[in-house]
Picture 1 (spheres, helix red, strand yellow):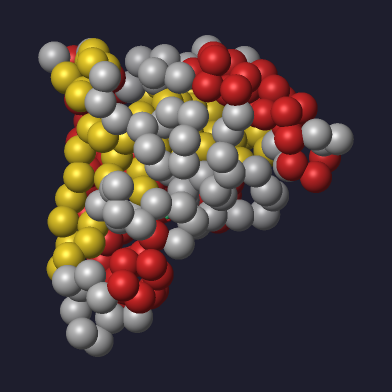
Picture 2 (cartoon, helix red, strand yellow; picture 1 turned 90 degrees about the vertical axis):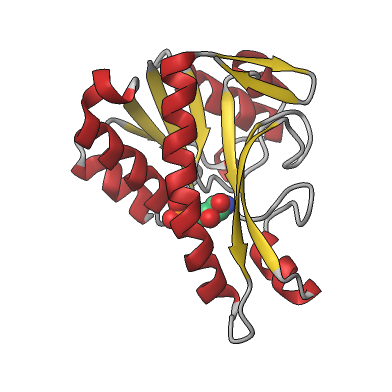
Length: 202
Ligand code: GRF
C-alpha cells in the first residue's frame, strides 16, 4: 500500500513510520511512504523526508486566494502520488470538502488526547489545564468535523503532578508513535471496514 504522510512540525511520528518500513520492509510492514506533504517550509518533518530520499510538497494557505483553493491544491498534490492511505501526523490544518471527497475513508489522523475529550489544536494543554489524571492519544479516521471521525485505537498516558505541557506531550508521543505505527500497518496489511462510528480491521 502507498502512504502519503502530512506533517507540520518535528515529524517524529513520520520518523516512526519511516523506521517501521525500513525495519520490516515494505512487504513486511504492508506499506511504503511515497511522499510527504506539509503546510509550511523549513520544518524538521520535511528534512526527515528528504533524508529518507522521499519527494515532498508544501501547500501554504497564504499562497492561495481562498481556503477552498488551498484545499483543492493540497488534494491535488496528494493525489499525484496515488496514495491508498493518507496519514496526518501532526498536520495542523483542517482539510476541506475537496480533500475529504477524494480521501475520506482512507485519511487517518493522530491526536494527542483521548477523543472525544480535548479535541483541537491544544489537546495536551487542555487536558493538563482541566486536571485530567489520565490522557493519551487517539488514531482516528478524519471526517468533516474537527477530531470527530471514527476512532480506530487509543492509548492511555498518566498525567503526573510535575508535568508541564511539553513533558506530558513527550510522554504521550512515546505511546502515540507506537500506536500509529501499529494501526497504519494493520490497516494496510489487513484491510478494514468503517461501519458508522465503528472501525473493523479484518
Ligand atoms: C503529535 O503529538 C500529534 O498528535 C500532534 O502534534 C504532534 C506532532 O508531533 N498533533 P511530530 O511532528 O510527529 O513529532
